[in-house]
Length: 130
Image (tube, rainbow, N blue to C red; front, side, top):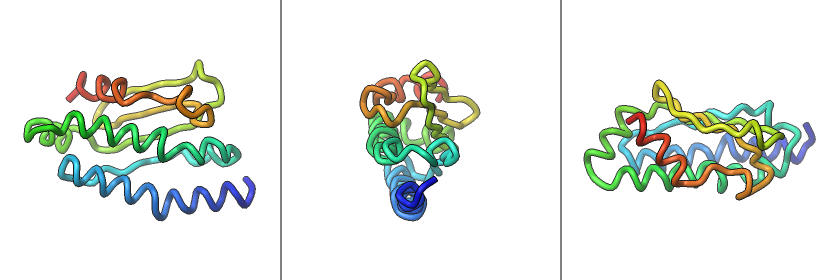
């Protein structure tokens, strides 16, 4: 891992992800942590560059569509415990799952919008198990 990647990871850990977690608290009433498999990102500056917008922003947008009313906010508050992100090199390894309160997303984040899970897919995964 180079200096650029270490700086990007430090920024994500200290600023970006805590801000996104606070945003989730505003959306559904409790902060939900982002858990990142940093080892999967450590040599991929492009994936780190896209992580906030292509992963976190999409998740938070999907949460907003569920938390339109008190029932949605309560369901998220009770059901969503953490969000796990993992970078994968091969698009065939892309995965989106929500089980036991954990939203898990594996994606080739370096591919930008072509590798991401869209808001609607994230929403559907959550709605199926809330």
